[in-house]
Length: 488
Image 1 (tube, rainbow, N blue to C red):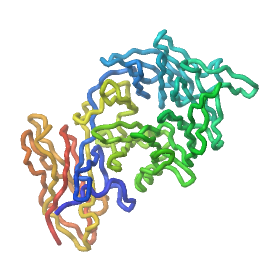
Image 2 (image 1 turned 45 degrees about the vertical axis):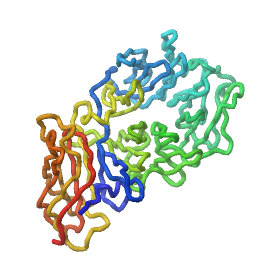
Image 3 (image 1 turned 30 degrees about the horizontal axis):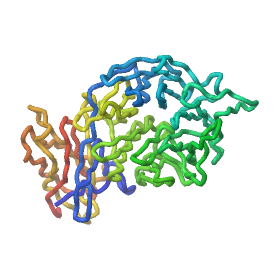
Image 4 (image 1 turned 30 degrees about the vertical axis):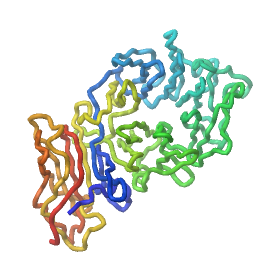
């Protein structure tokens, strides 16, 4: 009989968190009688060995520029990275931790860090602090975007945005007037809240506050060139400024509104929809801090992933736009799961490059790598053994077989194992682990099976939770789970 290993992916709040885990695996669609259905679990990409190292870290931002180089902030240093993975320190900024934002023009790089802004001119090889200085009264920008030859930045604890001069990211209009206003700034007045972040989407500036989003466009006006797109206003805002990222042709972010917070939204045109499940939102709201969440997106094999990390909660989650399902991405160390290593992402030199939050290393995300920079990468899946068909009488389980690829991608001379545990009381206590050999090299018809697995009881519970896991460096392709047994 089939066991519903593909039945739920953090979608049902009535389920215990122990009954519905999918860690370092993501579901894949397969053809079904009525259209595509979830029918496969694949391993999430691992991390290659370090491509390069830049100072002590953490790697806070990575950005592929139009001049063919990648620029990165590691610790308090701004570095350039070439296609041979050689790195060069260009200058230092004020802070050593926290998210940064980088933009480029044909001749310059602008980086902001929540305290100030610095400009690297790769025509003259000069590095200059441009915020704050005598040409602008902007303070504390944490985000910069680029559009039509202009850079736009926000200002800490204000509802103002500032614009650079055309084709020069180092220059702003000089302050004028007793109020400190400038010819190159504007007030974002859809509501009186402060501007928290911005994003450039399809030549439009999306401006986020705690409970509102405005869209501005370049209208070519003298002085400040941008103005609000009339009639466009989203009544939800953002919980974590660094949680926003482009997901295919929309934006995804951890948001908030009058109805509550801790919800992940996706823009659809000038509207928004919720992509977090009730269970996911409940988990996020349970974290002691959400404002420090960071996110990135990437595309792999026709899947578009939104990956969000909560540093304080030490947790990473991922949403797959293709399937609409969530899973977790976690680093395994000292016998426990924690947030993934990746702290930022850029597609550069044909690779999905991520920076390490613990040091100055950068790596490539690679579905054919089954470790995290050489460290064991553990995967895990737990699910209700019987699902909606749970009986009202005890059941015996003679065997459980995991249907999966075997004998492929197995290092020569190794004997990979799958660990099996089960719980009959909702995940409070567990039996096992039992080790199931997963097949050596060439054993492509190997059966991953465990026999004599006992029975449920009236006193402990009538459903069972299966949990399988492994950390051997092999590719994982799980196509189902079957069990044998009957009434106890």
